[in-house]
Length: 420
Image 1 (tube, rainbow, N blue to C red):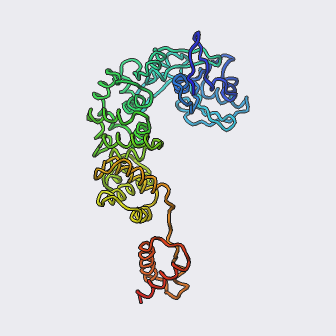
Image 2: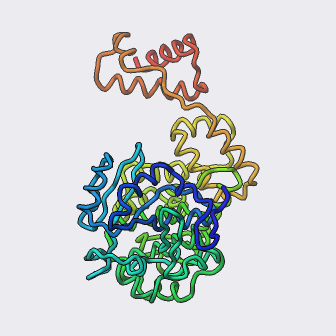
Image 3: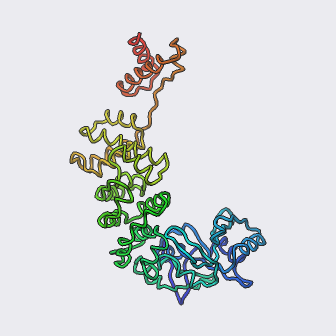
């Protein structure tokens, strides 16, 4: 998509300004003694030619007034963060956050006590990075109080004001700085900011693990995550975040493989490349990063499947089918990408590309015999059923996963005969 641009102090070419839903927000909130503007990421992304995923508003109106005006305009409101001045307005199935202008009264590194205000400039000065502090009114007039436009043009991520002070207000800004540089920055990191995050990184211990997890996964999804993660590791910050091993070179190799194979950025697999060698690492990350059970299971299953690839030579097609069946498609694909990233056994990229294509396209298989089938044959419920199913499965896998009824009947008969 083409980037928006600034002409005579106005934002031109930003689709969100023409969106009728956004205009309905302006119609409801802007005017009659109050002012509303779009602020933050939508403007940044439009100027960088990146997709705009959400459009946020700020306003001089207090939350009660926002709700009153929205209801008068027949718009539904959700008081998502009303204690901090944020009201979500629903327009034609799309949500827009509308936040009252604020200034910080007190901060403790995790959360802020705020007071509602009426100054757009003061609200901008309390934000984290210059590229996030732009605002635009309904007519496209752009407001830049911190030279954010210049930093967007240079792809330069810079804290507003004194970097250490911004970080001490909320230590999550350490990870946000890395994430924003990985997603939007070019060249080297801002030296003042990098020095500040190194000196203040102990403050990360004060954050909830859920917030760290969320920000780390966003960092791992960013286009330059491998380069930035390498710098984070070199600075000694990554180990405490992960509470264990970190392998930036393996992550960098995985990112190259994703690009080469046309795969999308996969933050959970990237986390596996960065921090998982054995199944126990998944349990450590589950606890330390408050991963979901599904995320933990994916990491553990990938590690378990990877152990098979580590301990064996290149698998032929028959062995790959067994590998795929035993571990499932997702774990098989994850393990192949991780083994490729490890450079296992010096196998060529062409080999791994072929193996990855195989495990991606191979249909998942399910044993075509159930316990009920065996009970119908006279086997009593209980341990004998499980033993017979295990024997049948072994023969079925060894026979190459036949699907014809006649072949399956022969396997069942042979298994039952051997168990009597």
